[in-house]
Length: 551
Image (cartoon, rainbow, N blue to C red):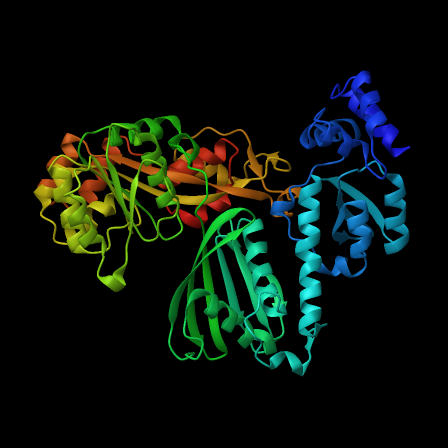
């Protein structure tokens, strides 16, 4: 009955014709769902089928990549049942059990799930491979912990013994699963925090740090030792901080992990920064600039020489913006050389240099060598010291376009930061083409955000900056965004092209207030104003903007 219903839906939504449906039914293999047959025969793809089901039945699609499953629900639904029926339970809400399925019209499975759990099922749809991946990830964790002796926060004494470094040992599997899960959830960092009575594993996703796992303290030493072995650290040293690196392949992606350990009173804390080396290149159009800001940035990087700086705190997307610029500039007739720490994305046609301080290959030293390589465009990952700043500015004055990042709070303070580094004002004035200051805010989930009238505080804020707003969007939360109300991040920007008047003031060593006034005269929009515009456009919320921008 379920198969017939799906067929009717697909006919109704014009995904298939009657002839194609008959052909699929004729060639359907034993125990194969009709949807699987259509995909196998290349009559329709998964997303077409799921969209048709959503349009016809109201069954909402869920992005499992953004969803953190409540592990309690896994204890009442058997793994074999999930694999056999291609479903994954998500969580229990009141008396309902939420689950994702490839076939939301298989009422026999829905009834069996109700009988098994005693809860009323609510179905969401998701691609088959996504569901199978989640089954392996979550139930795989359970199997691994059982092998370690972990059950209900109790661990057998046997696991305290050191294990051989074999690929199939439970601890190796556990660490691998933590890494795989983090990559699957698009985490930027993994934190392993020892507490008095447990070990917390936290992922930073879209800039927000959340607890995803809790383990007994007795496996902490083993876990840290495994990570140290993988990253080439000294496993016997627990008294001083250590740094390491892991390069591995996870979900067909080349992943670079930067590892940092920190001794605390409760044991060693570990933070792992995740860099996707196989990530796709962003273009300027994709990083969140509006039309005016994009035009200004394009004009900056179109100059044959000069220096363009991107500023902001750690994790504000500076490097992504630089890569977007390089992607626009990358042509066969130009020689582009970069110095990075680390090289986050390998770009075809670009000569990328990795900094190695241990062999004295610093930003400054690499930059000196680069200048002998006949470059047109130079990208420096970060200006960290006076020496690098001086060489970068002099390079820009000798016919090179230089792109780099710097840690400052806003665009104008970037100028004063260079002055504080004792760079001559006339050198800054003659070399600096522009500054882009940026922050990242979370995007509202497009599936569940709701429109409301601005409250009094919001209305006053918009009025202050002469922005007319009738309504704003607010986060609600749904299965697609893991009930967070947000999915992904977008940049808000402060773009400061250096005008003739600004050059004159810089050369005169003018103060911060004078430079700020001139920037406003030149039409610079602050990060706060940029954020308010994105609130007006329904991209984010005022709460998100105020977290990273101030008046």
